[in-house]
Each structure stands twice: as structure tokens, then as C-alpha cells.
Length: 493
Image (cartoon, rainbow, N blue to C red; front, side, top):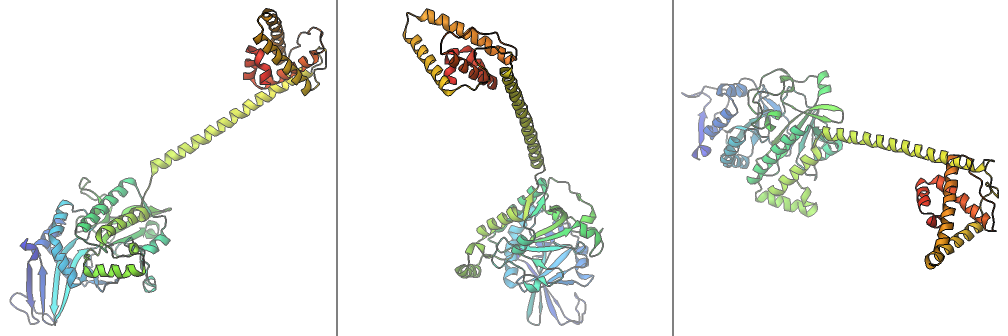
């Protein structure tokens, strides 16, 4: 544990000494915090001491603009490997306290979207202390970022200012992302699962350290534009730091250790937005803000005038849940190729099924109409010989009289036992004659001539017979039912 709190101090006078060279600057003191711990971190990420010093000291640093509200300065090494950021005394102290837990987390999971710290230093000159932290570079300068976003998952005043929008490469915020890319960024299922698992694991680590107010720095490179305009230098350069690219940061240890993509992508994560193919570069930044007393007061004060759940500063557990909900529901979305194909197949099958049902229903209607036409034609034929004209529409009075007569006869059949045999013989003869006539009408042939009417009720019986013939032609099932149960036929009519 004492290695995490060790501090090495070296004094560098302008005239030089036995250990330091002479220089043209005022005398200053250079402090290195936890040198053994950070040396272990650099070895874990495959950074050699010579390469580390060469990247920082060989060529002048590139100054970057700061889109955030902090007063920190940012510098980039000429080889795009490291970011040097000035931090406040409280942030440097918090990072030093964080080192033991950070060490355990990196041992368990070196592939993470959390910042990778490679060194913590302090320069003391003329009574001023400048604290510096060296981290990995999330957005490579060799790949031009067409869109940059600083996302926190909150909506209170989370919009880029006019001054920021006027820059050549502005950094937008949460509300800007919802307006510009409201559909979100789509990934294949495996990449989306790996990305969300990494984010969730990192957020739980930050929550355990009581860290909040961190951001997700998101860089979007559009491939079609990138083919026309290549920014930066050396697209085919080799990276010096392991697990530093966005794609390596979300891959588990079970993946292959060699790079999955060629050097032209610089480790970007493939994604889509509408019809555009993208490369995504991302990382969690600004994790040195703990939920101290000042932050609690800030949240309470802002919550008096606005909704407390939309404010950036919040307790760590709520902040992590809100951050993950925003990233999983608004920013990163999953492509469902199999589900889309099944829905298309299901839609096509439903269309085919409906078309087939329409064809069958059309054929059934045509068959019914044809049979009805044939039956009517057979009724209208002059060869049909009977006592009355067959094409005369039966009157309702005759039908009602026949129905009442047959119902009375059926009732008398059910109540009397003495005349059952005679009535049964008469009914059987009548049903046999009607069955033969109805079958002859359906086939369209000339029916046999019935006996001349012997009673005044023969006209009504013939009317009922004609109505039954038409109904039999329209509905086949009723026809079968009528043929089998002639006594109940009038009730059906």
C-alpha cells in the first residue's frame, strides 16, 4: 500500500546539477506520484519506458481546446498516443486515493472504457503548482471526427453553447444528440452486447468508488466522407498501447489478442445510422469527481429551481442508472437481422394466405352463383309440367298456411297414437316424392309430372316446394339436412 502513496521529488535548477541538465527556464521542482504503481500500469498496457519518454518529450505537444466547464488544459502528443491534462488539487488527491481500487480493477479487467492513467505529476515553479495526469487518447487525430459528443444522460442545460458551435469541430451534448441523431447508433448484436456489458461494468465500478458527473466522449467518423477527406497523418501507423482502441476496450479476454480490423479503421467500432456506415470511438472521461459535500450542496441548490432527476450532479447510484438508461435506450441500439427477416417472411406468408383465401372465396362464390343460376334456369324451363306456373313467386300467405298446416300435422303426429301408421305412410310417400323432385331440379333435368291436385291446398304446397328447391340450391348443408329431416324443413324456412 505504501507504493500508492509514494512521491518522488527532483529539483531542476536552471544552471544544472549533477543529476539534471541545465535549461533556459526558471528553477522548478518536478514531483512524481506513485512511480511504482504507474510503472506497473504502463507495463500492463505494453508501454515501454523509452517509448513513453520519447512520445512525451521528443516533439512539442499539441494544445487542444476544452469544451467542458472546467478550467483544465489539454495537450496531445505528436504520435496521438497520450493526452496530458491539468487537474485540480482535489482531483489529484482523489486519484491518488483511488489507485488501490483502480489497480485491482485493471488486474481483473484491462479491457475497459474507463480512462487509462499512465502517470501523475506536479510541477512547482515560482510558488505555483501545476498538476498533470497522463491518459490514453480516446479520439485519434489521424481519423477525422465528423461529430463529437459529450454525453452524461442528463438534460438540464445539456446543449452546446454558441461559442462551441462556432468552432470547426464542435463538441455537442445530450440534447444536441437527440436532435441530430434521434434514431440512435445501430450495432450488430454481438458488438452491442459487448459494449453495454462493458459500460455497465464500468459504471458499477465508478458507483462503488462514489464517482459521478462523468461523461462518455463519443466520436463519430462517417466512412463515405472519410474516403473523400483524409484528416491527420499516417493512417497506417502502429499503436503502442495495448487495449487502447475502442474495439479492444469492449472485447472480452476470450477474444483473439491480435487486432480484429486493419489499420485503416484505427480500432473504431463499426456502426450504422440510417444508411450511413460509421466508425465509433468512445471512452469514459472525467471520473475524478466524487460526491463530496460541495457536490451535494450543488445538487440541492439546482433542484430547488429545476427537476432534480435531470441535473447532471446527482448521487452515484442514480447517476449510473440514468447514464446506462440513456446509453442503452437512446444512443446505442441493436440491429435485429434475424427478427427482421422473420417479420418479412411472416408478412409475405400472411399476404399469400390472404390472397389464397380471397381466391378460394371467389371460387366458392362463383360456384354458388353458378349453381343458383342453373337451379333457377331449371325452374324457368318450359318442360317443367305441373298444375301451376313454376316461375310465379310464391305468396307469403300460402307459405304461412302451409307452415301452419304442417306444424299442426306434426303436432297431431306427436299427440295421437291411433292414426300414426296412416299418417306415417302418407308422410313417407310425400317425402319420397319431394326428395325425387328436388334432386331432379338440382341436376337440371325434367322432373316427372306429379299427380293433379286433389285439394285446394295443393297450390300452397307447390309454393312451399319451390321455395325449398331454391333454398336447397343455395345452401348444400341445409339441403342435406332437409333430405334427412323432412319434417323439420318448414321450421328451417
